[in-house]
Length: 171
Image (cartoon, rainbow, N blue to C red):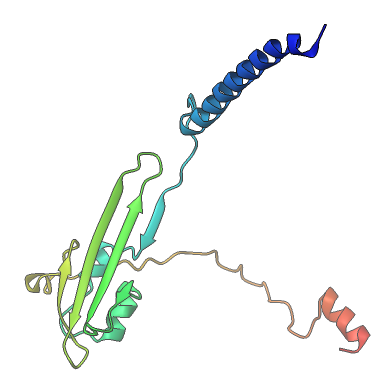
């Protein structure tokens, strides 16, 4: 049988091969865009910025220095060189399970002498009427266990295993 008799079968096979390759390519690309998810993967909560609590902000008072504010609230996320007397504390939390985003913004303003003159933001500072109220005492005394009478601490000169090894090596 001459070669040209096989030619229509080869060409039709090429067409089927191209169609099969096109279908395979379309399914492959489509598989990348959608995946059935009977089980969802675990996503972590992403927390960024300064965590400010109401207790921290309640400690702020007018006239505090920049160092005192930094001690109470921590180092601010944003210290703009064009607004040297303003510090911005920004907090953002994206919950992994729900994708919900929580944002808080808090700013402190200082005068030219570096003294706190006002604050603004999502967390409220202590009002002047609240100054007379005493903050609750958060100091607790915890008993870590007392040493029984007659018990003595080991002598300081007594060396342990590694101390004896170092001494035997000449150190």
